[in-house]
Amino acid sequence: HVVPGDDILDLGTLGDTFIDPRLEKMGARVLNNPNLPTMSLEDYHTHRYKLGIPEGGEEIPFNKGFPLECNCDLMSGVSFHKGCYLGQELTARTFHTGVTRKRIVPLKFSPGNDVSDIKAKRSAGKIITVDSEGNGLAMFRTDNFDKTVKVGEEEIVITKPSWWDRDGDSLEFGISNDKKHLDYYSFAENF
Figure 1 (tube, rainbow, N blue to C red):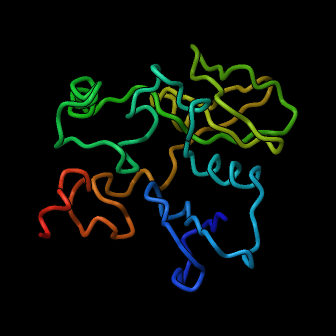
Figure 2: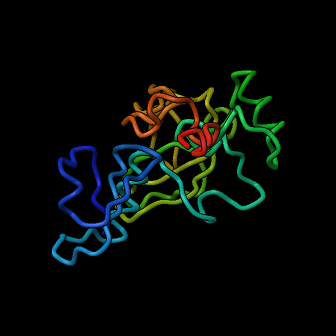
Figure 3: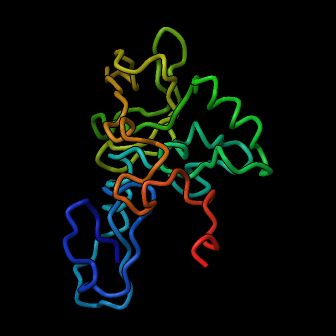
């Protein structure tokens, strides 16, 4: 079961619970509790799309997706302290220049619209996925935030999600004990 949202009060009573480490608003996964109301897979995807959270090989293409473009740095999914992983040098260099030219963002437009491309003066981005309600994800050029762009014949404005303004070096709900990047701190330090 997926329990979405950031208003989960007492997870211990739900069953075996795992908080989604990407973002508090993504809620938790609960095992072994058949009495919970279920969320459909489409509703789960719509929830993710509205937050701008990509997942899986269709939304983050294997061998093509850069961690910063997929917002992994904003979801505590990239370590800038640990070295020696594939793509680490490019990821660190891009992060330290402070310029990520494209990012995956949520978008919303009228259902049934032609969603083949996002157009501005030049290509502003590319649609990744869309649900039946017109919610989706797009790889969007960051220099076009808050500007009017066209999706098919419809003009829309794509803005950066509010959760991007949180501290990207720590999880916003305290699971990291205020330490930067969980993977940097070995669990062995407690022994």
